[in-house]
Length: 129
Image (cartoon, rainbow, N blue to C red; front, side):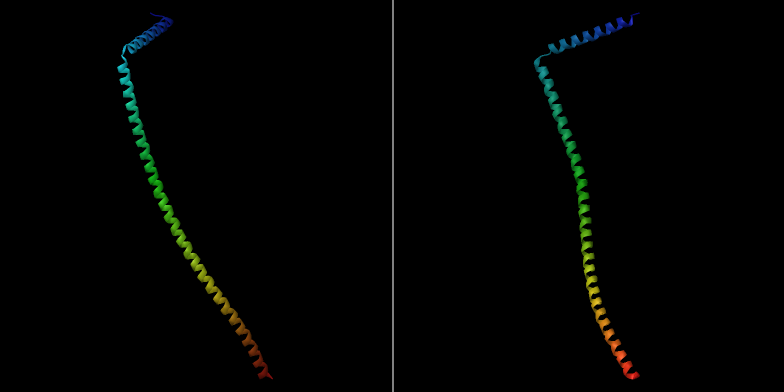
């Protein structure tokens, strides 16, 4: 049986032998096959980039569609609130006008009441005397 140190040396020797044989195979291939491999890699890389861009574009379009829908809903809500505020302001102005008219009438009635009380006192004084 092999000792652990000897096993390690044997494994390393096999790795070195494999690396040397791989290097010689690569060195043995001609330039045309290397260029062909590079072209295939470039083409597949470009295809992957296009697919990735298309995927990102689709994601952005979906996200923007959701945001646009939310924006439209928010704008509609803001417009409705604006209309409600205008209506409340109009009604507040009408109520203010009505209140002023009532205050004026109340002042006139208070003045008339004071005059009538004075006249009533005068009449009581005349009839009593």
